Length: 290
Ligand code: FAD
Image (cartoon, rainbow, N blue to C red; front, side, top):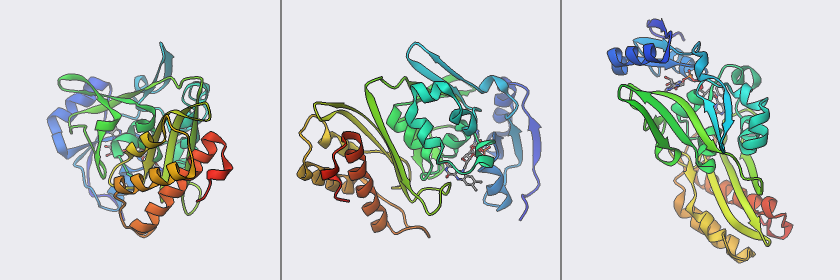
């Protein structure tokens, strides 16, 4: 299928893009890498009247590390993240996750801003933003707005952005040197959207967790920063403790049904991931019951 007819404007600056969004409101859609938007238009799932192409705004592309913060411009492509020494050194969880996003051709065009604004609950990067405690920076008619990642994702393909706002950057705290991470997803084939995935970061002390953040994806209508992690912090990790955390996780998940899996299958896979994650982070094979 082909998209419905639409008008096209190439934004010449962030201000120009914001002006176009102000004038056209919900009739306009921003175009970054086009890897989610254009398929949706071709399938006639959406039919914007105007595409505002921001893909040439070079000021929104790049990675800067300063004073303990990694700032990633919205137009930074997945492929840029994968080859960035700054991401490898200061946000290694993100590096592992991006390798699971789609395929090289899509990673060469798709952007971090587009992925977060698209807010697919099965996407890797939104869950990483929760785990890493990111701040999403948006620009709109009344200036800049900083949104904590845990308030940004509000539903399937829904975020806290208004139709007049442009996501301009993401800020991540530099990953502490003593922290460790785990990323894994179940997918039919490498590069497919996940059936269930987990992006975790922890600091390990005396054989247990001093801190643990568990960002699950494809377990509900948005990524989930699991509260169940608290059951595993500052305690001696035993099989019983892990079983209790997995049961608590069950209450937090609200998986959807689709062609890939039933909710029951997703719940089971999430618990398997939790077990593998704890096993991997603590290097405790005896806990790997799943
Ligand atoms: P676009 O397609 O240009 O835009 C997506 C949406 O975000 C649109 O609604 C657009 O208006 C809005 N938007 C874009 N930029 C901004 C901005 N700066 N501010 C506000 N709104 C904005 N993704 C995964 O995460 N995991 C996968 O496994 C995966 N597999 C894929 C497989 C295929 C075959 C394809 C085609 C895509 C896949 N994707 C996957 C999606 C891919 O990662 C996209 O690149 C990404 O979701 C969107 O980024 P984009 O820059 O292409 O955004």
